[in-house]
Length: 439
Ligand code: AMP
Ligand code: GLY
Image (tube, rainbow, N blue to C red):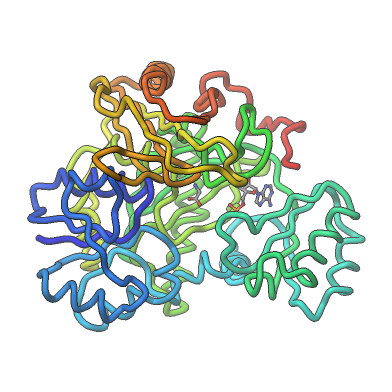
């Protein structure tokens, strides 16, 4: 079959890498893709915000499946548009994508269906004083979140009342998140360790891919600003089979059931961002698509036919046996531009991409090509993933950093402690480190 993959980041490079291995693939088109995907199919330029243009492209190129990488087109209803016209799509429709688009919806769903998450209250922009009154009776730190999409920046961890009051004023009065902050959530701060689980679902059945852990902060030991993700490893040993069972029973099953009951059947990848607390596993957030950079660590570990899995979900007949995890470890380290997540320069030549050792995959995120050279073109530039066959994160970590030491561009920055949380067992489940809270 011909497949159209939408998106241009490291996640999409990883999706393209895996889809391109499928025996059932005829041709993969990527819109727009990036220099890392062009060897895996054809990068094409389509006006993605005009769904009719995308539809015409699918018809003209006999596309049997559209795989949507990022949340934005899903939230805007690309799946609804294409599905209504007979094209199969891996990615939820607009109503189901609300689970990421509006935290207030996600929180209400969890509350209605008894899914464990942080206690919360929601306020709209006319309720500044009411929100401030609520803060007065909260424990700190507490968490203030914009209701809508905010490119991963809409979460403010507040250490005291003054910080929290400032946060809600910034959101409601200074509109730092624009209309995404027309409503906000004030949430209890959860202590524990985070993990990510991807559930691939046709809306009824689901399969979980190997667990992963993201590293959101820019600096080693989870210090400094939040980023889009500086690295990931998979599987996350902290997610034992006992915990995975808890996640399935208490989170994934009721979430899918709740969505279906509310006529928001979810087809795609339900991303569960989890906090493993001393009171059990709780949901930090849902995303309506694969997480990045976790995808860059999880997908290379899968045996079997990944495209078959995605197609079967889109077709409403999930093939639970299409992929298998039979062992192995993967570590992905993100190479970023100096200055990220604040401002940074672009256009530096990247060298060392040709000579990577076996077991290393260099996914492109923010790169472009000019005059036959690959140049930096974003904050997160590359995701360097090492895969080892044994269950040995240490070996995978070493291989990833060995590979990185041969890759150069001006201002290259990466964390040097990706996977250490698992390797050093700094934080154990049911014994959270009370010092670990975000600023
Ligand atoms: P989100 O955008 O919802 O994924 O939040 C970004 C990050 O903020 C999460 O990955 C957590 O590290 C942190 N966070 C969000 N909500 C909470 C919470 N209620 N308690 C503790 N940390 C949180
Ligand atoms: N890794 C977190 C995200 O994709 O939002």
